Image (cartoon, rainbow, N blue to C red; front, side):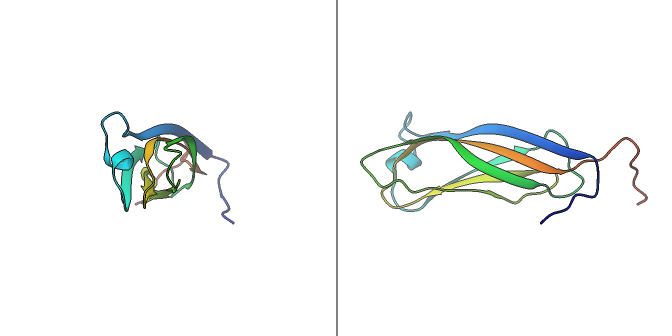
Length: 116
């Protein structure tokens, strides 16, 4: 369990469309085998330390005639942002993905100051 020392808890959130490959026959829609897309997210304000980040798919548009495989995760999380990573593989055909995210962590207050 992560314990926050501060009464200054920040929550940032967003929604990102990662791709729309059916429109231009992109690799997630037309390809096969391992495929990956990454999208950099910058928080609206810097956290004091690395926040907890939670992701979920809020739109999942796939071809119903193929296997539906998905791996969605947050990687390279820092106090300033993170990367949304979506992967699929095999014969899966993914037209569009939208991911919603939330980050929770300590933020700096007006009375905080750095000694170094």
